[in-house]
Length: 332
Image 1 (cartoon, rainbow, N blue to C red):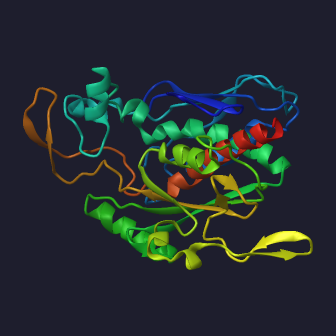
Image 2: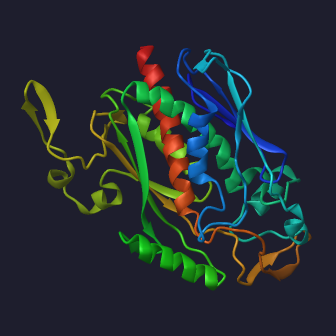
Image 3: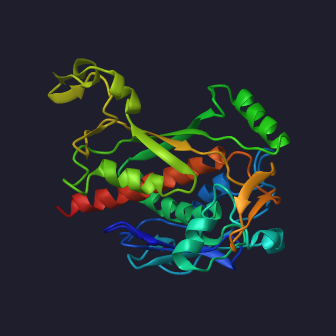
């Protein structure tokens, strides 16, 4: 499945070391101001080679809008966009083509399809998220018109919280050891109106979880107080309400802005768990395609921590879902 959304639909395509990655956005309303600059500013936040603690793969990730925009405005027709791959080194993976890399989808992809693009993981590579960010940039333009903002940041890396320097240091240490670290990203949606979400299987919380869990390396999600709710009593977890100037006001937000899977009008607060990057240069035990035990060391250009570059991807996936539900709500 390469498509997400009901009214605001996004289809992505492309592989890590193919000619290009891209997306088709269908269902975007007409008349929205949109330029390649709007898309590029989002892509620049996730592109590789910007920091010492990210991969050295140097991609400009320059977007090309192929359709759906005329004279700086959306036409209401499908918006097609691509980013060409420029700094590919497929030869780095030649020696791994018959080996299943631990932590990667090599084994499962081979089992399901019987054939795979082993260069950088192909379609299951984190590079696939380029297309998600392009689509998310379009979604953010829709949300901006409704004064909805999505913000994300890394709140924890390698067990370190709060101090960016210490976070960078733990990444550098892992890199020097040929290893990697994971972390936590928090996403906050501000300005979403109350009433977004469809019962029972179209809950906003379910769609957000689906979108965010689909990001490569994301292994868990929580809303509001999240897993801490398991340690609380109902009197502690429930969010009291009172009337203020003719409006219902919540005293706190342990629900994370969602009740019954429908938005309350408060900030929607989520946190995702990002696993350590699977490609590491430390020796690892694995198996070959023909069933032989072996050891491998994954060489090449890899992020020792993918958390910083997942931040704009997480924002994009949240934006795609909120834009879809906003349009659904307007059609009720």
